[in-house]
Amino acid sequence: MQGADAARRWGQAMAVRLLLIAAVAPAGAQFPADPPAAPGPLSRVRPLERPGQAVSSPLLRARQTAAALGLQPVIEPALAEVDFGAWRGQSPEAVLQGDPAGFARWHADPAQAPHGGESFAAMSARVIDWLARIAGQAGTLVAVSHPGPMQAALLHVLGAGTAEAGRIGVGSLSRLQLSHDGRRWSVVLPAGA
Image 1 (tube, rainbow, N blue to C red):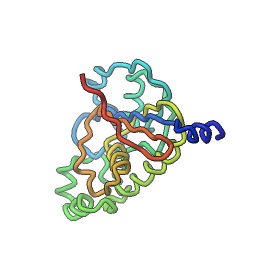
Image 2 (image 1 turned 60 degrees about the vertical axis):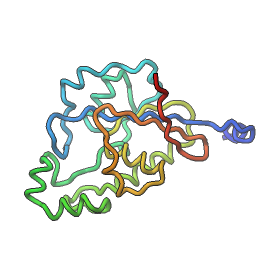
Image 3 (image 1 turned 60 degrees about the horizontal axis):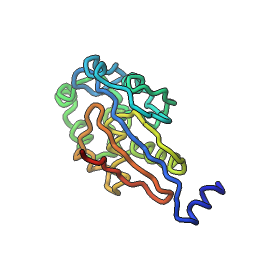
């Protein structure tokens, strides 16, 4: 890491630019298991001009989105959506009707996983660990993921708690650009036209 040390001494910290892209959502509102991306929106995805290095969630819709973007990603398990356990494949309405107390606990507390899967807090921890692993890299990395991991990354960078996740909307193909300058992560807002 001599090059990185020298760059820091001269005030030219190595930087990684991370572009997180939300996978095309599956058709229908449900707690996803591993359904494919909705075909209509997926057919409208255009390849990135200069994709560079890429990683993707192992879930099918993320891999399909990555392919549509012209990426050849390495699979990164940390980018998978939260595991919804027994709720997989059910609509929020069905879960609310069948397990109203569990749904309320899950919605109120990010550390809860009444469905027997993964809590938002646990998923956030794996995303934060991944961000720490890639922080020392240089260059641009494109990562195809899902709403939960993108919310977790943004909350971490802003120093906000996981309870604030519901205040961040992430739709199909939403993009979040982050940068790490060798000391900390920052949000990079795109320039307007």
